[in-house]
Length: 212
Image 1 (cartoon, rainbow, N blue to C red):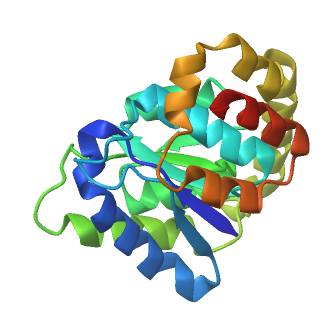
Image 2: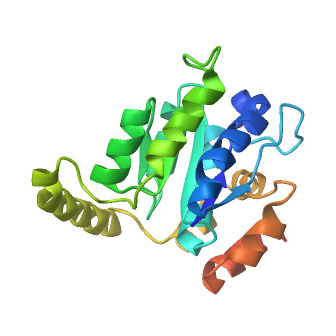
């Protein structure tokens, strides 16, 4: 599984800490982590939490990433931005228990963490524990066992609802402010990572148009 990491400007200084914790937790499980930045507080390619949502949607809808780890100061803004897009199901995660239950019950493909709130001594350990529980088993396994069938049924219903309530991503990208989208896709390594992994040529073409 390709796991993309995205940080916005207020918490960009923690990018390396988050990246190391994520890699430590998931690489032994056979997953690949791709860091889309921001790459520190001085990174000139600044991202807002709204742009985190745009970038997450491009990565997930195109197949360039299978899962996105993002967040902001509280995690709330990034979660709301991500969930405003099609085929993105983002959970707000504050603890290892949140991580495990979101993965098993809700089977989402994106998480938003609060990187400023309650992030102090041992913060990197908390991240490692969250990422371990988030990816310790395939998503959608259910919890508790007697709730597996209705939980899996509800997830399918939610996916069907999102298909109706959201339009396709290419249409969205064309209607959004061009500079807002361009800024979201202008990270130092975005083109290098994205085009090598993108599985949807229609989205790739739309991205090329934005970046042209």
